[in-house]
Length: 607
Image (cartoon, rainbow, N blue to C red; front, side, top):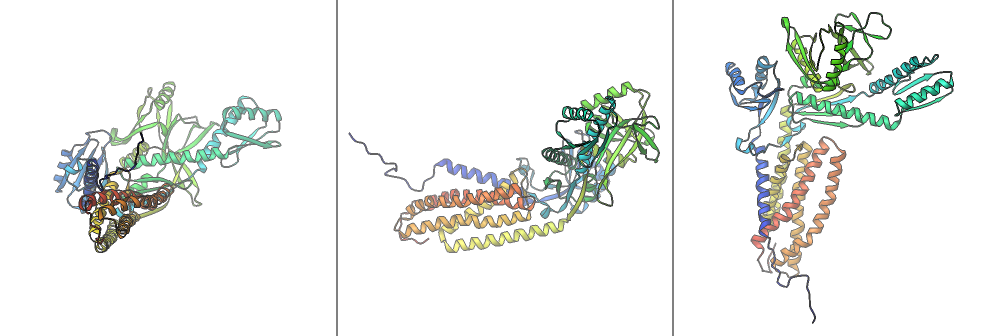
């Protein structure tokens, strides 16, 4: 007995999709259409009140304050720790902020914002408008330089102080320890045995530091690999602190990313008060708590208070600002401003142990900030803002006074909540784009997109006739899906180069259909029926379309990975456009053609 097998069915039914494929297509289009819809409504001007604790300020309180001032709002939304006031008139935004600042400045951070204008039923489903970049919405951009020299110097100081202490404990004489600059420490000693002891101490206590030397001098330095690691760690820590500070300002759509070796680029779309953002982002402030030493003590450092009087304090602080988890400005006795400090568990234990052993002794609170001198070098300025006698054992919560006015206390509290910079930063570039220029960019960009889309639709309808109309439907579905994806993907931002990517996507989407339709025309010229030509045309064009889009996708991924800002915006829309054009050009257009022309067996037909 013999059997004959054939891989291809004898009676293959041409151009028929399974029902589930149509459901996938329909559900996908509906979801992405709903996702793209809020962007059509745009956004309204708003003012946001951000509080640390939920329900600190109610929407009723805000409504009463605005009603008393004669200002009507579109709506007031209570969002746990935030209250969002959506305005009817955009030109009232600054006025409303000033009114609310007078009423709630001691309890909330007041910031300008934008709120979606889409209906609540659409927003309640979780859909939001596309996030616009700085060049479309307007706002401010900062380029920050992270000064690593002081970080290296501080690490070298730590090693230098440890070696000096070791030399004193071991009663070694004739040793000169000094910083050679950067992350280097120079140790001079004429005794070989003494140098050996110092080498052993450094190897045990600081294994990441290399010791080299010639004759009577040892040079202790960080290796190149450790310098790179320290640089990366410092910049990453500053990035995290920057994000925390921007969150404290109530800005939710900021872009904070590293640029180059030691620079940070910050984009704040929609920010209309760049002065406030600049003061907070560019500030490098920290607190430290020092034991007060007796006047004239050798091992003490001298810091000046607000009056310029010298205060002797220990070299090593009790704890620094890195242990502060919360800081709140408040009004104390006699109307004086104060800052309530909350420490983490480690900081609370340090403060508790120190204050328990030093009741009746003074403790100084030092405020430090960095600035640039005339030569562009970073310099640290530290001053004593208060000296208080410890009356009882302190815990993880206490208060400090002497922070200045209530506004200065609020600023200090905000900086302490957001964290102290691990390295000083300086704003080296600032660029502001007004809302009107952003609106003009949007109008020009989408005008170019509309023109390109219209010409393409007209060409396809005229050149490919009946199949051209199918391509046009698929092209419109492609744009809807692309806008829906931009709105749906977290962190996706539409920029002006991104609009250029949208225009390019129009051409790529049509190119998919052009390849398919030309293959169909070739098969019709070979004498096949229309249905057979459609089937073979789609199958034979798929590999070419996939190869072309895959290679372009590689380019988009590379651009997104190594680029920043506008380049990433272009790469994002380009990559998403490739996915949607493949989906609509092959899957959606095939579904429509199957339903309309899939059973057409005519041969003498023009496409």
